[in-house]
Image (tube, rainbow over all chains, first blue to last red; front, side, top):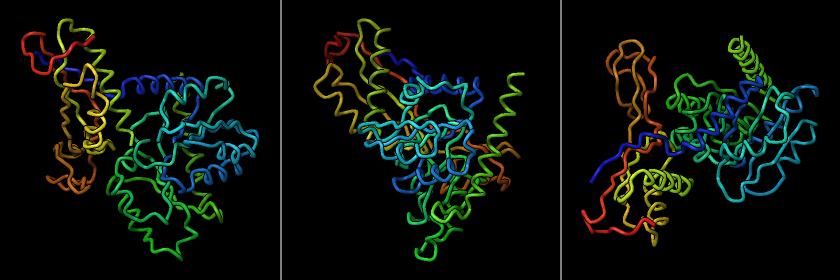
Length: 226
Length: 126
């Protein structure tokens, strides 16, 4: 018997494509963000609110993933930005190849920000690098404060936690401080914004985070280029 | 439930590697999975066994090594296993610690046997 060391990632093919995408995003000065949550936490609503707020001439595009239907793309197309639906046909997450394929006929020179809405799932999307600069996890107050402890991987890997549906706080037994503590237990120092996509409460904080992140990315791109 | 896809990726890597070892067959593949990798070892084992059944790799064993989350302290350099999500340094109590492992999803090794060396479970890899 001979033991051969393999020493490589199981998802090396996905990671290879993701690295290529990341390099392309870098070349074109695009900030790519990967939004992940359980089904129904409000990723699409957050994107609707975001697109509604951004100036019409902004260089933004959205890829939205679901197992079936074009519903989310139709919701998001109303705002006039390029939007494409990725239907996975059963796969519970997006992978880098799907992103590569769906970007094929977009001119990346016309974009500064690419928002990817992953398939609703707190587990599997955490394993697949899409070439994004950051993952963002969305959690709604109807889901329970212990989600970060039950699904640590995604909270650990995300730069920002968006706590959504805070308009429902008076009606549900959700301790927002406990949820934040749990998130920071898994991911010390994690940034958190609290929003209601229904009332618009807290969205300013989210838009500020986004604007700040875009500026930081642009200066990073300029530094790397010079 | 993406363990099926992961199992396929492991098997694909085994087949690629076997191209470099003519005259042998694979008997065991080892993978390392971090506790923060969002992979359920039992589900992976189940999927792996399901996809090798009735194939030329039916006798291939899968060994999963689960790796704990480890942090290294930025203040004193102490390297420790994080338990119950408590990432504070147990030596100097600093909160400034960084994750050094725990989200692995890696192929570790492949064991190959020469045909004839052991007949147990050997099948043609053609």
